[in-house]
Image (cartoon, rainbow, N blue to C red):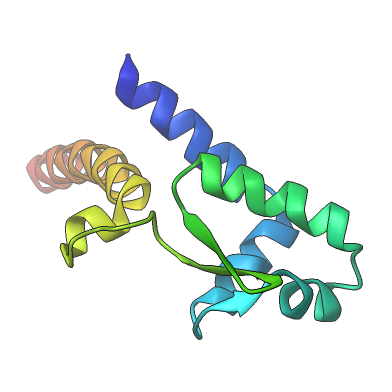
Length: 117
C-alpha cells in the first residue's frame, strides 16, 4: 500500500506539463526559483507551488542559498546511490516493467497460438 501512495504522488506530480518542464530544465543543472519561473511565464508564487509538489514527490530538492532558493533534481542527500537518486522514478519504472513482462508473455502466447493455426 505504501508503494501505491508513492506511485500516486509521483504520477500526480508528473501529470502537469509545467512540472515536467521544470524537471526538464533541472535536468540541465540546478536553478533558482526565478530562473525556473522566467521561461514558463509564471509568478514566483505559482512556481513555488509546483516546486513544492515536486518536492513532496521526492523528485526535486531545494536549498536556501543566500537570498535565493536553489532547486535540483532528486531528493536531498542521496549518498551518491543512483537508485536512491532516481527514488520515485525507479518505483514507477519497476511498476511499468511488471506490465511490460505481462504483455510480453501474452504476445508470446498469441504468437505461439498463431503459429499453431
